[in-house]
Image (cartoon, rainbow, N blue to C red; front, side, top):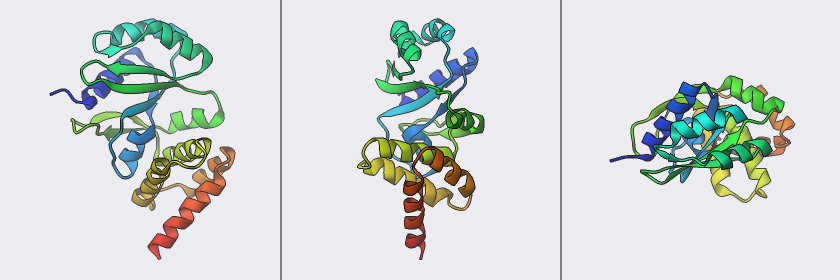
Length: 196
C-alpha cells in the first residue's frame, strides 16, 4: 500500500537529482525533533529558480499534480505552491526560499534526518534544525494571532525533547531578529516551571 512517505521520497529524490536545495519545515520537522503528530501536509522550503520549473514539473508529472504555470507564477511573486501526490492525495506545500539573513542561515544549518510520514518507511531528507523549527513555529504562532495551540504545542514538544542540546544563544539572537523573543522566553520559562 502506498503511503504519504512514498510521495515524500519521490519528491526529495527529484529535488536532489535536479540539484534544487530544500529543507523540510512545519509539523514534519517539529515531529522529527520533538513529539510526533499526524500532519495533513508537508511544508518544504526550496531554492527554486524560474529555470528549474519546467524540469521539476516534468520530473514530477508521473506521480504528482504539478502545474508548471502555477509554480512559475508563485515563484515570481515569492508565494508557495502545492504539489499533490496522486496515489495518496497527500499535499506538499512548497515555499520559495526567502533572501533574508535568517532564511539563508537556516538553509546552511539544515540537517539530514529520517522523517516518518503516515506510518510508512522513514525518508532521509534535509530538515530544519530544532532551533530553527522553534523560531519558525513561534513566528507562525505570532502571525496567526497567537491562538494556535498546535503551533505552541509543537514548540513545547521540541523544547521538551531537545532541551539539553538546544543552542540558547542562537535561539535568543534570532528570536530577537524575528520579533518573537518574548514568546521564546515565555515558553522557556514554562519549561523550567514544569521541571521544578
